[in-house]
Length: 467
Ligand code: GDP
Image 1 (cartoon, rainbow, N blue to C red):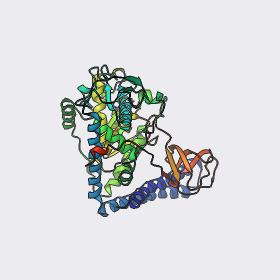
Image 2: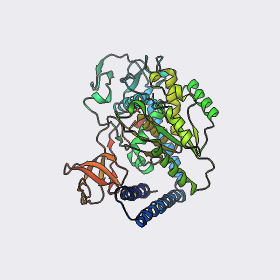
Image 3: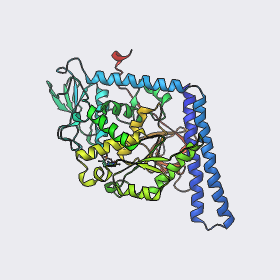
Image 4: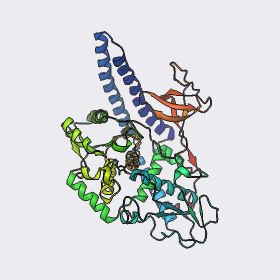
């Protein structure tokens, strides 16, 4: 398929959703604010109901379009080829011919934060290692999630080069001839190299933008694919737990982040909000054929969410980590029990057909990133109740206006086609918030009037690995 076709197909899908967010939220506003006559209330109800059906039908057709265009095989093959290409490069980078002479980048897995946050720290280190052509040395002894270190859970990230020894050592950025460079956490990185998210390698960009709806997420997913190769013991623990649970498709992964996150870094969202999205997913799926069991995999750091879900949603088959009351406890968060719980939850969420969660949580973003490994393009297989996708410490995320916008209400942004906008977030009501780089105005703009700007950086091309 040509690039334009793939971009258009994805754009129509995204904007079908945006169109309905806009109409639905406007109608709900009307319903809540006014005191309309009873026939008006009836009409609103009818439009909400038929409108939802209308949207489902459109999304179904767009899905059918992708199924009928004959490119499914190409998408699968291209996805495999691209993944193989970067995985070979990763392996080469991590296994230099002579470790004593190799240039190294040292990263400590000691960031004082949760598992998702630490994985993102490791991915960031890997991106910079790849960008600077330095073998990544991951220091993980005494890791708060497993004192014995990373290598007891996952395969070592190198078979041949794991020591940080070298002739010269300095902190970031070092010089071209410095053998060992120590990397700080992303928050205190200076100077900032061009390799930071959401940038993708320039040499892969043409192929990736054609294949994938969110190339930056694909890129992170590929690094996680390399880093998270489980040791046999870890893999068999996961497999055993899965067999016990009866994990079957279709399944929607629901992650409800509560406890310490709520009120500090994220707002509280009642379970109902998640379940509305789950229901919508299954209503949509039923257009393709009967769904016998509506199943969800529920993950949370708050075990109360499970009992609430079981009581209030008996029509759903709800499966979750059987140890949830132990593994989710905040008091034992940084322990081996909790490590297995979170590894398991992230794995199950990533295997689901669709994710419903808050992207303010790194747990769900990790699951979403890993999900990309299993599909040629799973960029649209999620619903976040709060943030759009982002990577902690990323450079500003830009979109480009494709239509002009004249403000119609206070708070609206004026926009000319071609303007660059720094995105702050999507309000999921048809509007997003951002800053217009031309005018410096901060405001709301209709989300359908922009398109994503894919950032690229000149990473090394590892040309010696190309077929
Ligand atoms: P964030 O704080 O949600 O952005 O994500 P982090 O991963 O950085 O920190 C949250 C930590 O809380 C996780 O690493 C887990 O230890 C724990 N946690 C959060 N959600 C879940 C969950 O659904 N299941 C389990 N087992 N633990 C969770």
